[in-house]
Image (tube, rainbow, N blue to C red; front, side, top):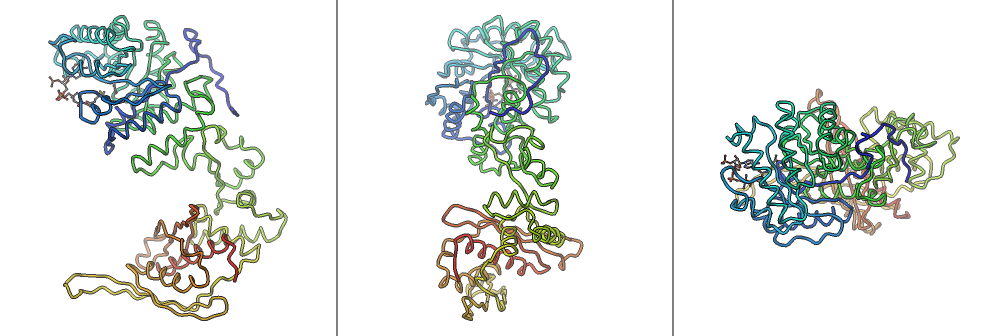
Amino acid sequence: MQRIFEYSGTMDPMSDDTRVYIYDSTLRDGAQTHGVDFSAADKAAITRELDAIGFDYVEGGWPGANPTDDAFFRSLPETTRGRIAAFGMTRRAGRSADNDPGLQAVVRSGAPVVTLVGKSWDFQCEVALGIEPAENVRMIADSIAHAATVAEEVMFDAEHFFDGYKANPGFALDCIKAAHEAGARWVVLCDTNGGTLPHEVFDIVSEVVKVVPGTHVGIHCHNDTENAVANSLAAVRAGARQVQGTLNGLGERCGNANLITIIPTLMLKMGMTTGLTDTDLKGLTKLSRSLDARLNRVPSKEAAYVGERAFAHKGGLHVSAVAKDPKCYEHVDPDSIGNKRLILVSNQAGLSNILARFDEIGMEVDRKDPRLARLIELVKEREFQGYAYDGAWASFELLARRMLEDVPEYFKVDSFRVIDERRWNAKGQLITLSEAIAKLTVQGERNMTVAEGDGPVNALDACLRKLLLPYYPQLSDLRLVDFKVRILNPEAATAAVTRVTIESADGSGVRWTTVGVSENLIDASFEALSDSINFKLHRDGATV
Ligand SMILES: CC(=O)SCCNC(=O)CCNC(=O)[C@H](O)C(C)(C)COP(=O)(O)OP(=O)(O)OC[C@H]1O[C@@H](n2cnc3c(N)ncnc32)[C@H](O)[C@@H]1OP(=O)(O)O
Ligand SMILES: CC(=O)C(=O)O
């Protein structure tokens, strides 16, 4: 695998071990995200995905807290590479560990790993729990010692550790020492409120690893200052060897540290190893998008490493250099995390963008062809009018092919008219209906037809298909999957220029996007629709 930049800084001399353990909390802290609600089946499926790619720990949830988590722990998925953790809190004040039903539900869930959260900030002991700090230390020690008699591996999540350390370092250290001495394999330092900055994390973790060895120290950061990833990396630099986080940064409030960013950064830039192999790393883009699909979320196009735009090149200077060597404008090889490069054509384009795009679609054009300069000029002129070709690549392809190749005229529109009607029907219901009438010349024959639709574009689409299908049966599986309207100069109010972008698909699974621009919404829609039909006919090799 190509590693463009190796990390050249020095690691803490106390921990020359480069192995970092990855602990995923998507199913627990991620489930605390506003709007996220996993079913037990979702949890099982995500666990399998995380296990398959090589995460070390999968925190499944909190046994005893809700029926979904109970159902998940009742039939734990089998894992081969990752260990499932049950999460819960230390015993309640005034109870013994083996007489605390909440703690018992966690410890006896059947999960091989138990992670217990406890306070490490004296202020929280007084305010949130209403107990003396010394009692909190006893709660931690008792609970961890008890869990260690049942579970294969026990961890302690030191809640508010960084705020606690800043307020009273002695007490914060007493809490994690108590956990470590009671048998916790890992003590995990949590930036629960997410307000700590990277230099503070580095300094504090550097002190902690003098008390508890770095190979037993983990980090759990929240993203309230957009520093969760930076803080996690700072902790690793200072010697911590377990990183907790979630897929795509899900989590309470602003989210957790995003493991999808942290893992490639550790492996490709910091010279660290994880449970993932280089081949597993290539599955990261798919893993990230699979979670979005499950949650019915649109994947973030700008996401580092895995977003659709993470390796998209638009500026002519960039594309020209990328064509010579991608390293010029790419910090890592997109293939290393299963992503791919995207070359865009727009008003920021030069000859290199156009040639790179032609290469992708298999068009062979001599770079000295004088028509290319005219094509670039035309793209820029049309973008000035409002077209946006970086999204509508099918319209660009049609424009280029029409200029450079012999694209048949599949149909000619002689005229069209759309009528909208809004009226009360016989049942007293308000209905809107649209009717389109079009006259087209197809393969030398003049045709006219009428079609109805729910709206004007729908009626026009129906009308075109009705006329064209007898000549071009391949249009039968053409579908419009998305329709977007953007007003380009809203200050002109109802006389504004409108850009319509249409996404189409057919039975082959290919999707393509076309664009139309006009002061008239129907006209802009018609142009995008017509491009879509022409693009499909040309791609399918239709003859006239
Ligand atoms: C930082 C984090 O993200 S930690 C994870 C947070 N996640 C969640 O809270 C989600 C799951 N939680 C739940 O379903 C519920 O809160 C339960 C089942 C755990 C507890 O429910 P309840 O018994 O009704 O308590 P409730 O949620 O109202 O309050 C929490 C109680 O735990 C106590 N508590 C909080 N942290 C700890 C701790 N580390 N050790 C012992 N007790 C604690 C609080 O003092 C409070 O007790 P009180 O009501 O006597 O004051
Ligand atoms: C444990 C945890 O989620 C936190 O302290 O943020």
